[in-house]
Amino acid sequence: MSILECRDLCITRGQAQVVSDLTLSVRQGEWLAVVGPNGAGKTSLLHAIAGLIPLSGELRLAGQNPATLTRRQYARIVALMPQQPAVPAGMSVRELIALGRTPFLHRFGTESSDDRRAVDTEIIRLGLTEFADRPVDQLSGGELQRVILARALVQEPRLLLLDEPTSALDIGHQQTVLELVDQLRRERGITVLAAMHDLTLAAQYADQMLLVERGRLVDSGRPSDVLQSVQLNRTYGARVEVLARDSGPAVIPVRPNRA
Ligand SMILES: Nc1ncnc2c1ncn2[C@@H]1O[C@H](COP(=O)(O)OP(=O)(O)OP(=O)(O)O)[C@@H](O)[C@H]1O
Image 1 (cartoon, rainbow, N blue to C red):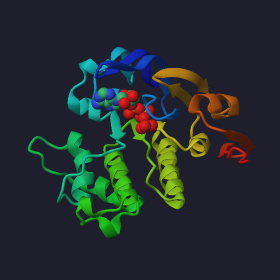
Image 2: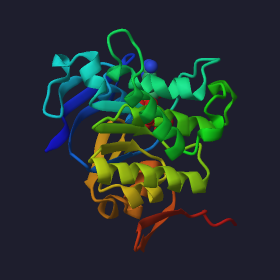
Image 3: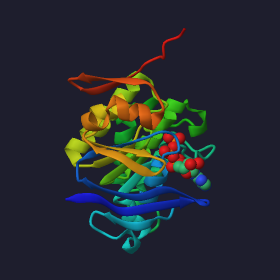
Image 4: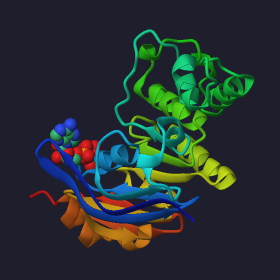
């Protein structure tokens, strides 16, 4: 079953069309990586799917037209881990994560034991116990990124949208966090749509990959098909070498020869 289907999707920001005629389909439990240079439209795509900015074309979430969903129904299908989260000053880590439970709250906004258990579980899973009562504006970039992921996970979404989920993480936490998301994907059948700049890491986790440039699809398919050095050199204006590894293709930057 497709959890996400987009047909001829277009997104306009300001005066410019930043995503053009994008068609894609993601099956339940699949991991789709969206890659492409700065300004390619990855964040715009994720935000439009999350219902934060308008789009034209067709979008179906779990087979449903999002226009027919209430905000609460929407939030029980899709959770976004944004690249630049708003961080309310003075709010504690636990309080910020608990915001992810808003779609589950009862009429008078009181937390149930299920809500508290969900928050505690993610605090432990993401190694945030020692920060739980600290104000979120007193965290490092990488600690905050894990808090924002925890907020998305307590929402128990069917589709998890990750915008550069590991950009602030050290290599150990990158692996921990991506393994955790992959484990949830396998155990709960969560579908993952992740915009990532680290192509080697993206290839290790994604089943499918979309390469976009200036809002248009350049290529799609398995990571080993999409990550070809000629195509990457052209799309990114970079010099890279792609090595075939058991864990997937590894993309290595090559420094131009100096005179
Ligand atoms: N609020 C906005 N108003 C006008 N243009 C915008 C706005 N937000 C983004 N854009 C433009 O839309 C285009 C796509 O931006 P977007 O953030 O979606 O790209 P991206 O692929 O996520 O980039 P990056 O890899 O740098 O995060 C860019 O040209 C950007 O300048």
